[in-house]
Length: 260
Image (tube, rainbow, N blue to C red; front, side, top):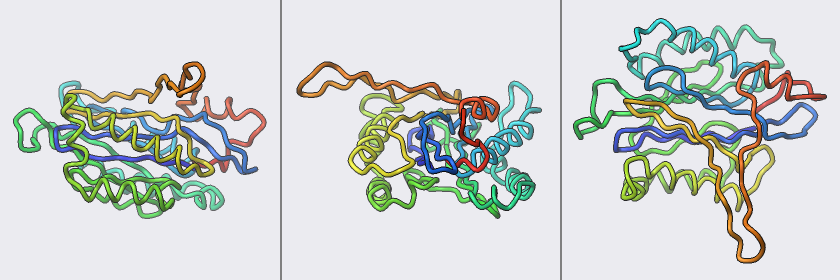
């Protein structure tokens, strides 16, 4: 199970926030998986659903993007459109029991030439592709969307709907500097999960920022100061970043048919 939240901000960047929990076929859960990654210049991708299919999707996308010259960048819409047939082929190559876990993808992109209205600030985008057709759906600037099981949780839906309904909601964070909205969004997501815990969703998260100049991923680590007691260090546990690492970390669990 998982919840990956994404938005294209009005000031030249896209943000994706992804939890790290995996649910195994026996119903047990573990915080052990990074689900969002830089893929190319100004392009990032996250996955939900079957872990095995998700990693294969990233592998296929990386192969598709590998031949770009070092000083060139892809148009996000073209990446999303070209991913559709590849994703369909990858998805159909897996057995029915694996496909039954579904596969959802989120692409974050920064346009290499188009500005959002202010010179130097890229027009960014978020595309969602869902199995089995993987037809890319682009979101509007300021709209906050998600993939994974968290998308079906009513309190989570309400929070994202409220953020999307107010075009200025994310802009308030920019008073702290460009990118400040990502911090506010991360805090909102973390508090929403804490107040409304559901199986399969972790409070630990990776935060991915995509600008025209860079793609970066960091964690939502923090020091928590309760009214009573000593400081609590909230830190990201060790996570798998490849299928091979995930298989090793699964230990006694079967990594096949594991969902995120």
